[in-house]
Image (cartoon, rainbow, N blue to C red):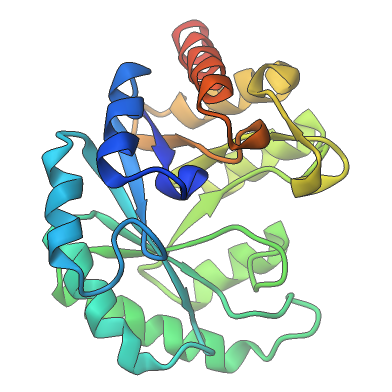
Length: 243
């Protein structure tokens, strides 16, 4: 089953309470709470405000860079995730692409994070992103084999074709998809979600194919506009109903 929601950093300008109100108004079920603005590591009061919205916690969206971030920062991240009862903690696989990075330090740091996350009752999830070891499908698959216990996210590239998008989702079986539409210009070329109906309907169908719970979380709205977000949420829900 697909669980619809949003990534809270889509609206860094809104409060935790406003994020909750917007998501509920749009008929969404869950939020990935960001660690940079809405629920900073160690801010348990903010975590409780997030829980008070009544929305499901899809994940805790940290900016922990495995192999780069000081490991002393990890305990506060995991403790905050525990306060949220977050099933996933999103991290990043380093700061360099797979052609340039030394895999060893990233792998070892991820293994360390997985071990400690397991003890806290959560899982480490990898952002699928350029300039990290998850910048290609092949490198991501390799990393998942190298670090048992870590799970993948997925998000599209700017202007991505339908075939490769569905192939990536089918291969990775991600726990979460960040849902947005970009043109060939990437993040500087944001589009309404409806502009890539051709891609999102088959991708969401693939995500739902095996009946396992997965998150479909909206992100990167045109002009960071809540009214345009409402339109994207309506489109997302319509795709899921007809997938």
